[in-house]
Length: 99
Image 1 (cartoon, one colour):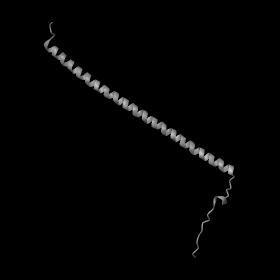
Image 2 (tube, rainbow, N blue to C red; image 1 turned 90 degrees about the vertical axis):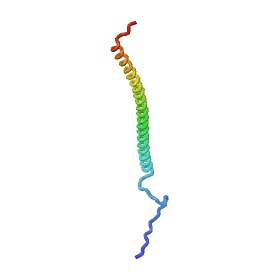
Image 3 (cartoon, one colour; image 1 turned 135 degrees about the vertical axis):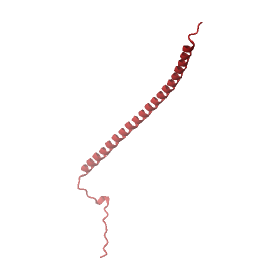
Image 4 (spheres, helix red, strand yellow; image 1 turned 120 degrees about the horizontal axis):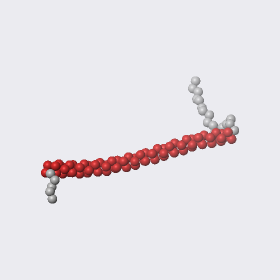
């Protein structure tokens, strides 16, 4: 019962398709156009998302720098305010200077 099973190897020339060549071309063209359109859509969406990420990154950096600049300005103004408050308290204790 030692039977060897051989698979028939078919050459390209021996293949017989039941569909006519024009139908095969139409189907393959439609299939190719479908995946190309899908890929181009995904590529456009990826580029759109990458641009959005770049825009958001730049915007955050801009607002972060602006917030830092305003924080430094606030510290400076608070220091000036404290100095003026001390000067005012000193004037209240001694009274106005007569000139």
